[in-house]
Image (cartoon, rainbow, N blue to C red; front, side, top):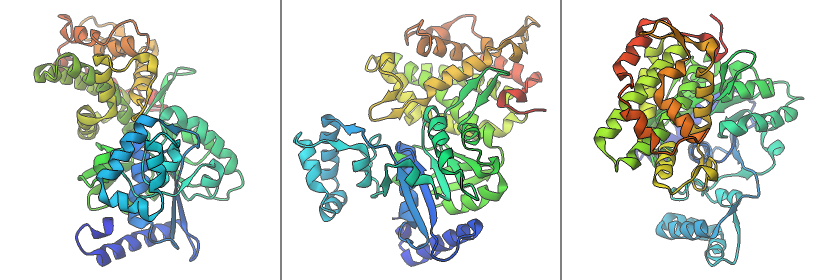
Length: 456
């Protein structure tokens, strides 16, 4: 528990209660009216985020109510049930908890094949289907979306970007009669491209704003170089919550823990887009690692090219790209080391996964880098986004200067090439020196605010 990290549970408990009281005042909550926090979507990060809040504040039941929504119906296959049983029996604390809650027997029956478990059912006991090896604290799980969100004060979006618009469009119906709109914290790092009437990136927070009518100042993005299981196991981590000052500062204080430092920043959309961009190149990194048998040299060559492309793209998307260099590289680094997108690229190259299996993978959830490859390629292929080529002095679509992105699109989206083609792209004798690509970006006025739906 967070309250016992430094051995002084009373002091830390008092600090947590003070932080909760401060946030309750911000929401204008009266005594006896709990602050209602609801997680929507139960992937690894969404589940961990809600579990951390439950561990920090769940004991203050009269002041806060913490729940998570997950659809009913997703079954746990026998192989996963067997592995889950092994995890339970390897952890004495978890085993004792389940026995105490009279919940152990169903896992025995599932192990024997005599019972079918459901994802929402095991989540109540603290097991996320996408992260079986890291048991969480028990969670209050709600299957009915209307029941979960209609009176929520804070909604935490843990959905993939591909599901965000649809689910929040449904929520809009439940909020029609509300006098005040909830505050929404989005954890999603996916992006989409909209090409008409003008090419631009669409982010999850923009989808939420469009679908619900919740004012932009009430919608925030939280992201950082984080692996969900490691954060829950109290590995030191940091993140940024981005959005309007009214909410980002009190929420940063509320979310901060000794092992999870939360900073705040006003640049929401750009940080959100960068969170999607690194997923693109993480898939390629996994492919290179597998195809070269973890060659440090080959991975370094890939890293040089992918970071130069990301720097090039950030110059298109933001007026002050140097401010993003640290956060973007940190997020990219951790994703290349241990993220699901790099894992996906590796398994594709090894032949253990195929594109026909789709981008929602058992035990991992949605691989958001696939849709991000499509979004960035389509966006940067438009003639309206053209930039001046340094050598030819002719306008070219930005994607022409991003050979890694082009090849990933050919592998993952059009499927013209196999995973091995990523090495061909790296070994092309005509490929631009990464340094030159960065120099082009730094010496030309590339910034195109329209790509983020903004105006100069």
